[in-house]
Image 1 (cartoon, helix red, strand yellow):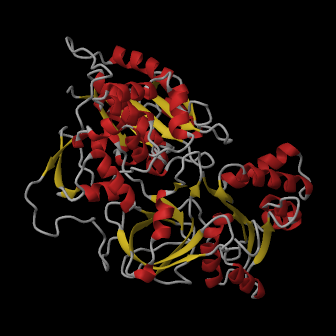
Image 2 (cartoon, helix red, strand yellow):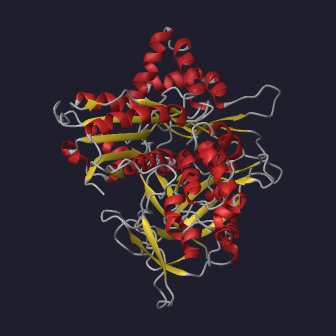
Image 3 (cartoon, helix red, strand yellow):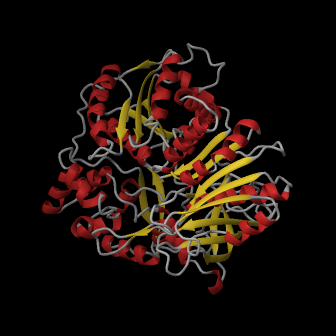
Length: 597
């Protein structure tokens, strides 16, 4: 393989940008080009000045925010002291992944493209704007953009003479070789690398803390459509500390039933031990896999077998299939022309990897174990807003979890991996430990004790505000206003008694919105307008900070619209001034949001 010439850097929240980046890496290898693929925050950003050719692949999250794994890079690249010639030796291209139903569609990719130009970089192509809303998904924009990109790249880095492109039907070598062990090594070699109790280093993704689960309580009524859990962990001796607004990351596992189904489809013995060896000298072994490792550990703890497979999965599966009819269908699903059919088969009904493998039994049984890590992505940790304060609950950490379950045209209900796994754990039946670690969230609450806060948290979006209210009340900060929204006061009114007790003590102004208790649905934005006088008084006269958390779809836009309306009605501002007032609150961090899809 040629020396690395191309660098692909990705910022990914849900895995799509990483998947596209790995596709770029594979396409480079087919063209005999050296290529490194790395997450933006794992790349030493100061080295960018020496890179001749870089492709950036980045998603936009929430309300125009960069993904978590590029936040350090984002801060660095926007430093004001970087010279305008810093990247004058670099040719670059930016591929964005976004959703046009959000106001700041592909904001991160557009802003990064402009910044790289400001720093002297030369753009090979206009920024690519992949759109989840397109009927064919981001590929509708990505496919033609990549064709143009390779034309430009091969002009700059022609492949070595005499080496032809590797055809699409030929599988590339696997990243790792998987060697089965015939002798069983001594006990104790397998297990997760964890942060030990009483360690001075806070836990991390590489060394999570195995937190004992103390309680797992359903907090919605028995007749309510959704199962929501309040889960409490003991973090004594973990070196974990957190403040209101921080998030906990939890590493889930696959169910025993799915592990068994997968191993049967591929003809694997779950108890078989193996070691991994990288094929490329610069390839890193997955840090979460012990050496040696059992097939059961690999499948239960690492491979995301219940995720919905991406197009790249079908491309590789087609290369590996020995069965003519199955291969024909897999090739169709992986072609540009077959994307509509793939969407109907896979994305619309949310069909999982293990279900697809069961639909292609001859192909599944023939998959070489070496390709398992190329074929199936790793399970990603899930982030939850912390719903408690250390000042109120020392040595404890609480989360509010909506258990994801829904029906599609498939017989089996679709279930969220992490929420369903957490809901299945019962500390009443014996000790339960969950791998977790904490990182700062996007919400930061005011340090000045007399600054009021207005919090808008419908549904489980209220979780970070419970932490904030507990923290502020413990510090004698009583100017707290909470707009909470749910369906019914007797079914999903989380922490009702706690809020009412704080109201009695004069520590909280609670404004609930029960959407289904009257003919006309009432949401938090309607309650905001009703209390417009109070909102304007606190924001304009008393310097309040405004916070919003919850589902990212339409609620943030509805709340912003309600605020602009309040600024006009209560503040007497014209439409453009009211919009500018809101933008100023956002710019000065007096209006902060934490939203999720």
